[in-house]
Length: 200
Image 1: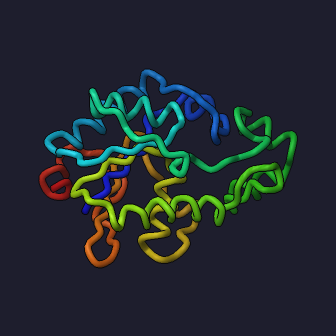
Image 2: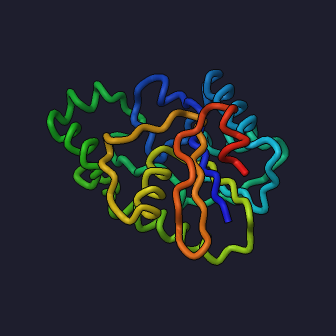
């Protein structure tokens, strides 16, 4: 079984440098192009199941990338809950909270401002991944968020990946496979030339 995890296209919050969290923001025009390119990477694959975060930016990406699909919405696949930072400009939060803002971001721990920490987010993403281990499916598409895919990566690798060590492009595709154990097959794919080599 393979999971094709797609980060949503550029959102209004990405463009404006706001903390998104669980807010219902839409894709920008550039974000819709990101979603179209993700669809090109996935072209030719037949998905047995399609899942998406229940946040609008992930759902919009799914509908553009896989026209006609009706993904099963899962709150488990949401981005990190950033609490009081939600919908606020990064610069505004830095001015209001000082070093606490930077520490929350660096440690992915937003509990001081009423959000989630990394372990809380990991627990819900890991529950989804364990569910997939028994899924009767060959190809599964998952439309979600940068933080969600990083927690998937933590689960598959069996270790915490430093938050700032990796970056995921909007509209990128990351591929995980499960047989007797999990494996990372491809990470942060944005180039169509990889299709024949990786997305099989």
